Amino acid sequence: MTERSTAERPAIAAAVIVSDGRVLMVRRKEREGSLSWQFPAGQVEPGESGEEAAIRETQEEVGLTVDAEQRLGERIHPATGRRMIYVACKVLAGRPYVADAVELAEVQWCDRATLADYVPYPFFGPVQDYITSRLS
Image (cartoon, rainbow, N blue to C red; front, side, top):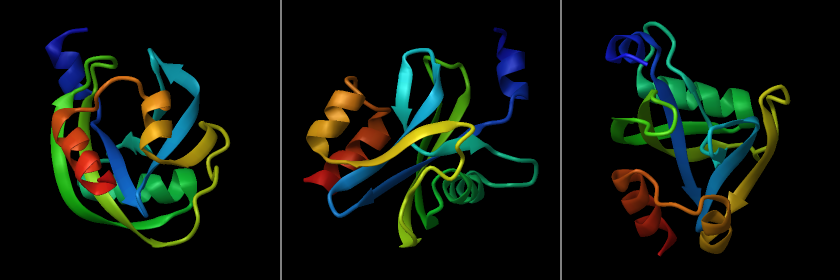
């Protein structure tokens, strides 16, 4: 893939949600390379900020109402080649469930041990730092 085609594809916004010592993860029906479990995420739509997309995608995928607390960082994802925007979000209302049954197979709050089983490699640095600080 060329740099230009990567730049032309919409960014993906991921909601990093930590609550009560657990991280919200979803398992997609179709794997993206080695990625099976990941954060609620989806494409940033035209005119939408990364924060707005993370909030919208969380509602659409898992039925949670969240608010963006801070942008943790951006990168080109090494496995997918997509520009990723990571946004720390806090839960305002709801309980997570598979709201988008076309895309998702499961949703789960993960403690540190479960998260390590589901994602056996480090997250993007700023995301890893945020999760580590919130799970301590």
